Length: 638
Image (cartoon, rainbow, N blue to C red; front, top):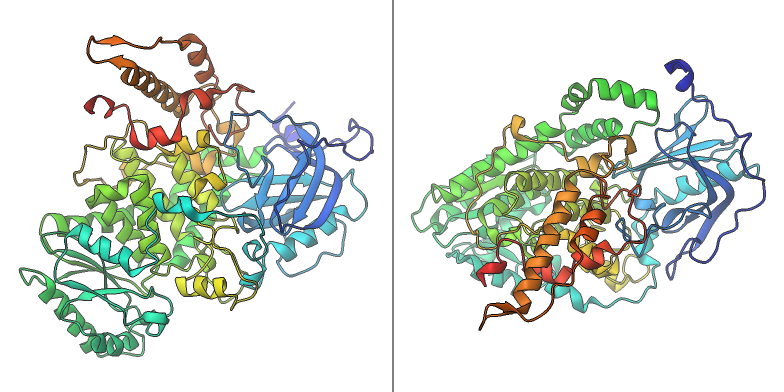
């Protein structure tokens, strides 16, 4: 068969089973959360495996709820323990907030416009998600208006026009937030900021509560850390001159007196930079050696450029036909270069390296300045702290860093992640750009981070789940108003850092790096050059089955390392130090576990094509609480 016929797009339905409704047992039916309601349901829907042009398809029930799009099939079995399992979402479920674009497939591919109802027949739908996952559904066997009804339900509920329409306001699931505090410092209180100032040992800076009740700047937190010489009156007068009322604020520092400061640009209408220069002079005086601060301009890439680059990258990672995949594969690196995505990664890393060297090598305060102060400022500030401070390379420290520099200092997550549909809001995956930069650092320093590739990928997925407040708002003030019921229904705040609300311990254990060396406290010296950067394959390519290495790839190395950790731990905890002998038996079957590990595919734990079925590999090799504190490199140092 020649390529032309193979890629013609023809699908045959003559061999389909009968037209009776799909019968599901309890384990196969869509699970609903308390407060979640069904909007639309379609029977006898066909789901196609990507890039197979209809060769492999599954028949089932497609449901749109107020929380997710769900496909349930009686033809699929659940391969327990061979992939990441989310309590909130099934294997073929996707949160509505994660859906990016909806296309009507047929003779021509047509992008559907949010807010516009479809009146004609819909035979096929293509759903493209913000994490590069995509689904293709056919309604050829369904009742007459099933495709149209599902499409209209998605167009209405995927793109809400008001924040109060997000599922977090309707969810009635029980919640216990006591576990959060061991996972991250939330920086919700003045005490948290005071502890951070004390932890760094940075002197000549003070905590100001001039923004109490968000009177000074509603987009920032209630606590400002400013030079000791700056009075509250100076702050009140100065913020009027800055965009978003974001005057220079301390975010990190050293015991030698060098600080990392963030600020926005002056308002476009202000040409006199006197107020800005006055504050910079106070920052200079706060340095023990009275060194003038080094200012780094972060005007590029801006959110619009990042979004444009991301859309090109997404198109490259979501080929919807084999012919398109082959065309892109033939000139992949040229297409990748044209997206400019890695150029943006390199730029952010270069700025962070510049800032880190100024602080570390020259003991100089660095001021990061950008437009509104809440996009690239978050990226470069966080990267700089990761490079300089080993605390932020631990899971607890990393999550605390995101709370401090992103959540509490007002990165507009609701706008940038596209939670709300509005022409006035600018969607842009600035947070993904940051995570990609962190992933690059992990590749260059694989033993310096406690967090793993899988953790970063999962964090990007979870950022779009409209249940957790961490990435749901534009600023903390909005979060406070929502808890008070001022924006609509009173919301229950659920932090993303309580990972046990989503995953089993065996999945959480994969968030930790078994090669982490907690004795390394030094500064990183990464190369930001483009030729030293890689493509984050696990995050971007995991849904393209043709790119998956069957029974091979990096996950096998990771699991084998974890197996070694478990063996060393077993010896460590059962060794009688008095006589140097084991007090317990080595009862592990090495050959059996090696056989299991060798069946894992390269996109584990996100691929569902793994050969592992009903084998408790994770239960044997992975224990989350243990790997949080232990690694193969530090076990023998105790």
